[in-house]
Image (cartoon, rainbow, N blue to C red; front, side, top):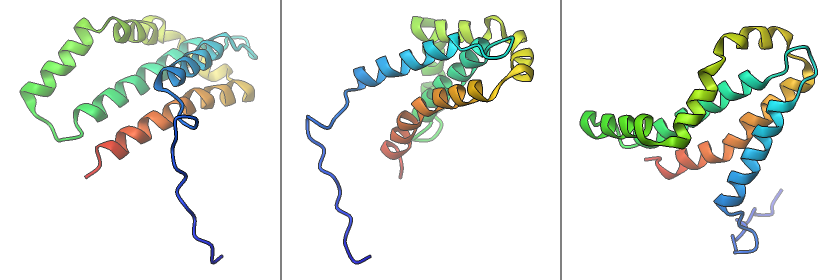
Length: 135
């Protein structure tokens, strides 16, 4: 192939606002919590995955410039203690954590695909974090 691949210019028409992405992400997560092909469904597993991904994104942002004990510890403490949305995500993630092994043993292919979709909604956000803070 001799053709050069040209970068697509981002315009206002092609941009998807972060607000729109947040709405889409929430809809996919809400849907995943309702999927029940096997006996157990994947509600608790979905909530745990969301908790892990939200924490991962936050930590990547915090540690992108290295670890500064005082500054990073204060930011983490503030997130855990004062961020109501994050506290709710963590409460959901660990509220019925003991049910996750049973959900995992009972997981069906369709539920796995839906769970992969939940992870997929975080791909762009995680990629953007890595690209923004790369050296």
